[in-house]
View (tube, rainbow, N blue to C red):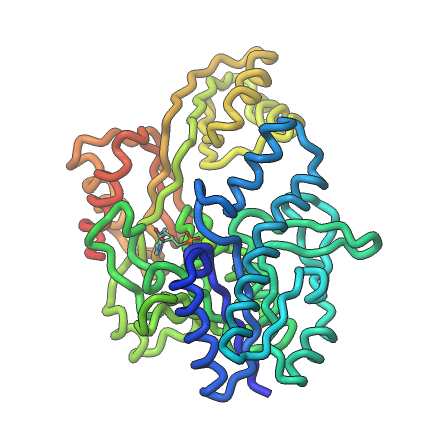
Length: 405
Ligand code: ADP
Ligand code: MG
């Protein structure tokens, strides 16, 4: 049996018209000889009646500090509704389908509500359905604790993780991620009109893009697929475009590189709602940096974009953590400045590794638009800068152009 996992995001299940398009994709897979497993997200985006954010709002209007167990159970309702509606749609067209919660699909997680990790997938139920010719419609983003069957969620964007994990557990031929764009693009098309679709990209690069803010796929899903070397395809529910194929790093044959042409970078990404802290350190006391980061860690604050020198430490936190970070720093002797309303822009590309002039190009693109760089941070495949959020669109557009994307 050739198994194909097909995951459909919020916009793909939001309307009747969209669900018919989903039905067509499922039917096409069956006609091509696959046994599909369908994974669905909650219907619609923020603001729509059954979207995850709406469900959270309903609970939080009642009790701001609602219990995490109830919050997870509430959030699971969105995918349960989507799976039932999708199963009903397929059944209406004579297709044998059955809606399953994450737990019914065998997804066992730890009990870290809101950010649960999949421990294992008991595939017997899924196997049984597939062997009987039934198409399982699995609720994405959710699992079940092992001992007491509590509903858990895998973190926002977690339906991608569900799809990849099921694909890995069932040794699927491929995992298809259907969404409202025609693949992974060189930048978020909402910011850069000129962004183009990447035909092929490595797990490593797409994972880096996802970590740096490309919300089109969850990094955890990419990591799971990479481990089992299962191809991922990101494509649109609403067209027949081939989408983006994600496979392993060594796939860089000459043929592959000619597909995307030889370019240094694969994409420009961004993260918003950040704040930057600059803390003065005492150059006479080499332990002062250590003390600073220990204090932050003890307070459970996750810091990014770390930059440490003898006299100075810089780092960024999400806007939600600013108050807490201020409190921690105010309780110490460190002097510091805070810059709010920041964003992080990044250029990702494994071909940049070791190439001279990449940083010069990056800096020239931003300063050429009179954008001040508050700080940079880099790895061998990514260069990022913290900038003021008001410059975000200009910065992403300039980098996209400078790196010939
Ligand atoms: P779904 O609900 O289908 O999971 P998401 O909203 O999670 O959809 O992801 C799709 C969206 O991701 C697109 O509409 C697009 O605006 C955004 N996006 C951000 N960065 C990129 C990128 N590099 N390539 C494609 N889409 C991107
Ligand atoms: Mg998504």
